Length: 272
Image (cartoon, rainbow, N blue to C red; front, side):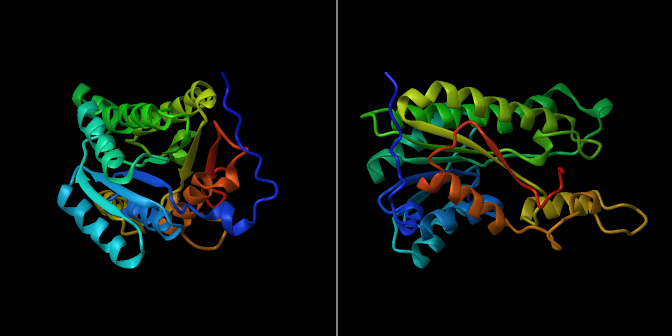
């Protein structure tokens, strides 16, 4: 039986944007893009659980968010490659908040290694985090969202690398992000009857802790700016984590109710 998504045509804009009363999980949410996403979801009224492989940073981020916005927050260690770790994190959200309405699969890694130097273990680790992690999170989220037929929204953080090739050394990363685009489409098909929407957001390069460390590590020997190819922009500036977080907020809110299965390019025109 297919669950009909509500028609929000007569709903005021402020209500469409509000996440008051909703419960969110953000993986890899302790810093960078994930933290920016968690902050915007909390500002819109959602209770937020931050799951991160670094439990201490997750706790710090949760405390900061709780000090800024009147919502409930949790921070805990979560390894998205471990299905049991994800299951326990989801249970913690349900037990503490009463359910899950929004799940953001943000955790990801992007080691730069030429194909001829990439070992099997390197390849498998990238896919374990970037692709299996999305599967583990989405599966667990859908199990709880379908319980009681209340539905929800899953947002997968893809990348412009999911739309084409990119810098040398990122074969595993590019492959993993193409896979996430496919997973997003397939899960949208399977979860629609459960009242669950699935969307992807594909950011361009933005200055996060991880991105800047990678840029510094691979800076050209001639002293030119690192990763210039990733910073070309039609909007006249480099994107910020909050630029991406606002697109995720749109996906998570009722403003995007008509959408499922799509991956939105948040790329400042980079892929045109």
